[in-house]
Length: 411
Ligand code: HC3
Figure 1 (cartoon, helix red, strand yellow):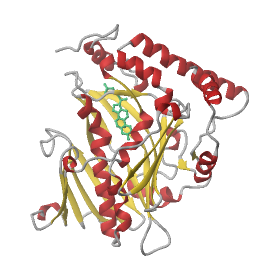
Figure 2 (figure 1 turned 90 degrees about the horizontal axis):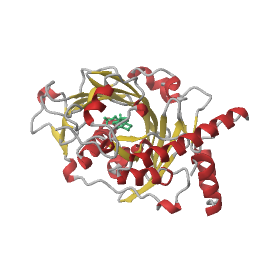
Figure 3 (figure 1 turned 60 degrees about the vertical axis):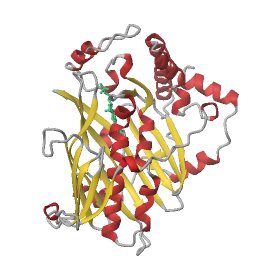
Figure 4 (figure 1 turned 180 degrees about the vertical axis):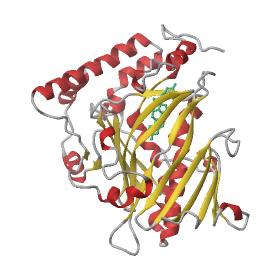
């Protein structure tokens, strides 16, 4: 049945028809109200660490191959949150808010793994790119990365993810930590014509390590190899020796997956090392400051009026509140240009020296030395100095905060 029109929003059928002439700009899709989310894409960076103890587990493993396996396991456990949590929560995938330049999403997890901090920042608006860092100081584990999306239409909306992530884990046998270069899977939207869009992953993604191991993950959906939706198979092998499979994984990234030693053709009860069942592994809650204590550029504070309008289903107010932010941002960019200045990113920089991780590991997984810098506004890396400066800055007074909100967000 066709979804009903709410407050002047278009019907699902007209939305689906409009997608056929889609120009690749995801932000420009005018979706019906029930598909609008009040969550900004800057929040999506938190999906990388909803099980902090799994995130830090590699730091405790002395064997390099098993450490690489734990990194693969952690990566696979993040997929459900990343790509299926909205459909599980709301019954369908939603259209997230398109972050403005400088938007921040900050939080921390406090649990058995200690404190794990999240910093997510919109580092580019044209093209849109979000950078993030997730750091657990006590375990010495750090994830940094950035991403953008390139969309196209062929039968459905297809999204290629641009960018990559780098996980740093202390090494028990060397002063230099291990680095793991992680590529991101492609995805497409299923269920569009039925009015209940959800994500399916496709193609392959890789994790390759400075310790000489590579994992290849293959994704498939219903009607393809396994016949089950959200299927995956993965192999871990010494880099360059794809046939010498040390470990393999099979299952579904939304349900359970099994990790076996050796190649899949020998899989049996005896080769099973462990299974992951998300239903048995509750996620850790991310702590975010209350809205009135947030910086005006923090996502939930900045979008609070838009979120309230979405909750009410008031599309006119959604449009009005969004355009206040967009107009203020446009004016800001014009002003910066006229003054020969650039927006200063708070936590991330584009280093002017070649990136060591990409130089060494990029070619193994098909990434160029410059990453995808041309499509993400730069090759973004977490900047510790900037972060220390940010952390030592005094909190804004109410007056300063409202002045900034007016100036940057028109509110
Ligand atoms: C494509 C997507 C925006 C991008 C989202 C990304 C790739 C962002 C980085 C995260 O780490 C992983 C991730 C998960 C979901 C991706 C979103 C799914 C849908 C959204 C489109 C812009 C909305 C398309 C409209 C709709 C609802 C009809 O499908």
